[in-house]
Every structure is written in structure tokens, then in C-alpha cells.
Length: 326
Ligand SMILES: [Zn+2]
Image 1 (cartoon, protein in one colour):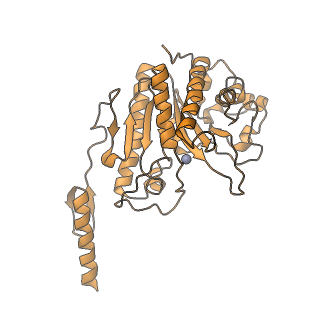
Image 2 (cartoon, protein in one colour):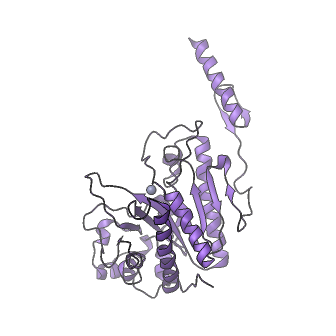
Image 3 (cartoon, helix red, strand yellow):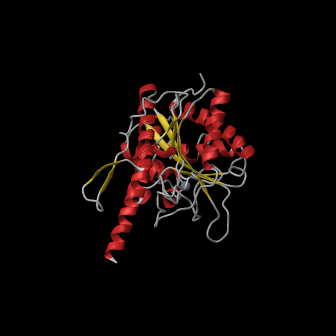
């Protein structure tokens, strides 16, 4: 029995060796150190080139504008050598990879604005790029590598933006589905790291009592001529600018707060890559789009990309005094 077990482990080792370069084995059946290229060895990252990480699990399109688009939950790759994650959420945000690429292409084709774009190509059953590493990759070395590359590419995009602009905006692109009771909220949920109950506060409370450094748009709030409550749900808020283009959004003038309804306030990426964590000048917003009228087909992706492009142009001008169109 013991012999068979050993044989089995050795067979696993041999098959692992075929897929990954084994640098060192301290003993035949205990520790395998797999070597990957050093992070950044595929750089420097040049405009109009595309960078795919190890296994093509992560894709980075470098940009030249102060916008970063991140799609952590839209991948569809299910390589056999990465085991399925055994805990946490594994639901794919359907078509968010395609939607993100459509936004990138629309901005570029129509306005010559090139956002930095980072895509996780792995299905969420293999990697969740919007969680801390332990939950995201659950100990698998290939998934951990993809995770490291994902966040490394974002960090390089942020560095580039800070050399070209004083400010930037990171958008984490997601999709939300039906509530557990079957109700489908057709609004786009914008997450600024304010909880539902915080958004339920009055404008005056938000403007005088809320600690804005806890918001993912702290950097932008410091630059904007508008009050915090206006930036969240006033005329020139991200949500209201989307509403004016036919996309119901929360928060906005029409929907100032969740009022007890299900809502996502922003996850790991919105926290670590925006200004809540760093106090820096790159802000972040989590965008949670419903499927109907936004994510279902290429026409919808294009129409939404058109609206979002206009929103971004106005938003940057009003709040950061940056002209995205030269
Ligand atoms: Zn998601």
C-alpha cells in the first residue's frame, strides 16, 4: 500500500515536471520550487503592445491616459493544472471581459483615449483577482503567479499615470445578477467603499461628518470643486451622468442610496488600488453592471461604451480638470 502511494506521488511529480520547470527538489516527494520569470521581466510596457503573463492567464494593454480598466471576474480559462477553488465565490461576471475590451476600443477609436486595461483570463473557479491572495489563488502556484501579475500590471499602470498626470481613476468592472429572491435590480451599482447605511445618510451628514479618507475616491474629492455628497450623487456624479445617458445607477440623483436594497459597495481591488488605502491621487470606483441592456451582446457593449466614454470625459473635466480629449 505504501509502495503504491509512493509510486502515485512520483507519477504526480513527473507530470508536474513536464508542465513546469522544476528548479530544485529538496526531496523527491515534499517540496517543489517552481521558477517563473521575475515580475516585470516582460517590460518595459509600451503603448500599442499587448502583454500576456505566464500561461496567457493575464493580459495587459498599456495605455496613455489616466484611466485604468480592470476585469477580474470575466475570464473563461480552466486549465487542468490549476485545481478549482474550494471556498469563496466562484460565479463568473458574464461578458465583463468583452465589455471591458469594448470600452477600451470605443475610447481609442472615437476619442484617441487609450486606457490601461488589465484582464484576468482565468475563470473565477480557478482565480478570483478581486480578493486577497490567499482566498484568490488558494495556494496554487500558477494561480498565485497569475494573481501577482494581475496586480503588478495594475501597479505599473498606476506608476505610468503618475508620471504623466497628477491624478487618475481605476475602474473595477463587474456584473451583478438576480437577488436571491429573484428580483433583478437593473441599476448599475457604483462602489466608493461607502456602505449602504453610510449612503443612507443625508447630504449634510456626508459632507460634515463622514471621514472622506475612507472613500475610494478620496484623491478625487480633494481636487474636485464639488462637495462630497455632490460627487457621489449630484448633477456631475458618475451615477447621474450615466442616468442621463439612459443607464439607471446607484448612487445618483434618482437613487441617492440603497434604502435597504442589496448593493455592493466595492471590493478588494477598489480598496487596494484606489485612494482609500494609499491616500494617493489615483481614485477608484467599482462598477457592477446588470446583464440586461448592458452585458448581453455586442450592440449593448458598444452602446454602453459610448455612454461610459462620455461620462468619463465630463467626469475628468469637472472633478480633476483633466481634458481627456486633446
Ligand atoms: Zn465581480
